[in-house]
Amino acid sequence: MLLTAPLLALLLLAYALPFLGVVRWSVTLPQPGWSQYIRLVSDPLALSVLIRTFRICTLVTVSATAAAYALAYVWVRGTPLQRRLAELCILIPFWISVLTRAFGWLALLSSRGLVNTWLQQLGILAEPLTLVRNEFGVIVGMTHFLIPFAVFPIASAMRAVDGRVLLAARGLGASPLRVFWRIFVPMTLPGIIGAALIVFVFALGFFITPAILGGGHSVMVAELVYLHMFQSPDWGLGAAISVMLVAVVGVLMALLWRFARPPALRASR
Amino acid sequence: MRRERPGRAALAAAIVVAIFLLLPLLAVVPISFTPARFLSMPRGSWSLVHYRELIDNPDWGASVLLSLRIGVLSSLLATVLATLFALGIWMTRPRMAALLVGFVLLPMVVPPIVSAMTLYFLLTGLSQLAPLLGYDTWPGVVLAHVVMIAPFAVLLILVALAGVDRRIDLAARGCGATATQRALRVILPNIWFGVLMAALLSFVLSWEEIGVTLFITSVNAITLPRLMWMGVHDNVDPAIAAVSVLLIAITTLALIGRMMFQRADASP
Image 1 (cartoon, rainbow over the protein chains, first blue to last red):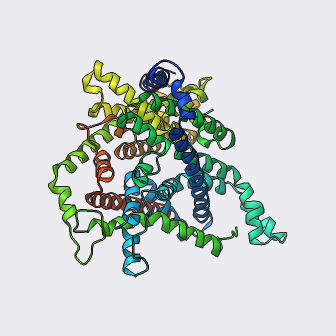
Image 2: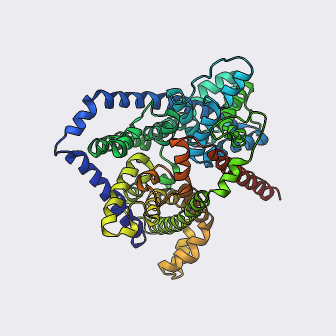
Image 3: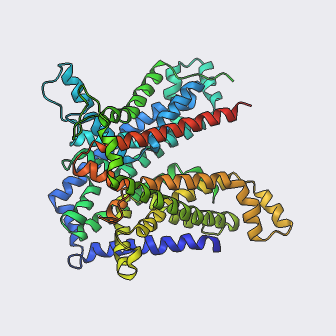
């Protein structure tokens, strides 16, 4: 028990207590009361940001989970060479920082970037397309960032599938496509749910990628907190958004715990 | 046992995803050789001016050194705290183990923006008590990074501990080993690889941390990601492309190296 004390003390003093301070900000700034929470659900600007955040997170969750499923499938069931290549494609982006990856999309998609330069040289385009500094850029960048995180839970669910079940289905005359959709996908459903929840939770609090690729045109909730902290000092509203985010993530994590608990935590019980 | 390999449709889908994942990383390479002072493709002439900029401008070197110092110190502290915590949980199996682990993992699951605000609250408060450890100081950044990365270290070390056979610990206890002896001479030697991985992951997470660092620094403690943020967000500086190429090259070489090492290891 004694060994657990230092880290518990650190997190209590340097994380839990200051968070309570943020909660206090949300009900005391600028004056005591629930005014900031009421603003959050009645202010048209705040409301439109909440709706946009929900829309972007949903789209990113669907696209990242689907993409991760295809890659995880080859990573788990491919030939040794295919598995190695898939692993590199997952791990290289995974280990590269969010800043570099968002910048990569700027290099690719901005008005003087790779795509626009090539399309103009080929004579397909007269004017550069606007591919970043809008919602499209944010969705592409966030999907790119979150695919590796979605691959891991899906791959571990796929590894747990007993190959003999699939062979039995084939032996009974099912086509490969039917085996995939009727046997394999349902068996890996917990991994899909886990991956989708992880992606959604991560996407909710995203700040760096939307700030760079949205260019102030498609502000999400996290960027709204930043703006209220540093651009128009309105700490009370920023704090209220933070508390609301924690509540939403808490509910989603409870779902995750129910459906797809990481094996490490299961073992430690 | 015979197993079915992915069919053509599955391979095609995976290849599309793989290209999507790698394309933006490759795109920074030509951009980094542009002679222009703004983000653009080099037309005709290629130039190393942005790589020279990294050497000539002392800000880049200073931020790399600062990030290394913060990364090493944060990783060391987080790994030690996480190892103690995980050992405590594993050896004594307290009644509320799941609750304690859940609490410790909080900074990992709470949205980074909320952690950033919380740590901003902490460090601006500390500034008044202990100016050396407060807002916009490098020890303050270390404190914030330890809080943020310790959960990841805890998770990796718990995974390593889950693979340890409890009977060797029981045997040691039966032979009269004290708790310290069991921890240092029986359990740790069995999980040293996990601890090493935890330290490595902690370092990388601190080295590239920006979400929280952005909130708790302004002009004094400029880490490498903080400097890159200013170059990407305020005005797009092609020197960022040069830094990105170097970072991508290091990561790719390290991963390919590890893969070759594993292959050499696997084939006797």
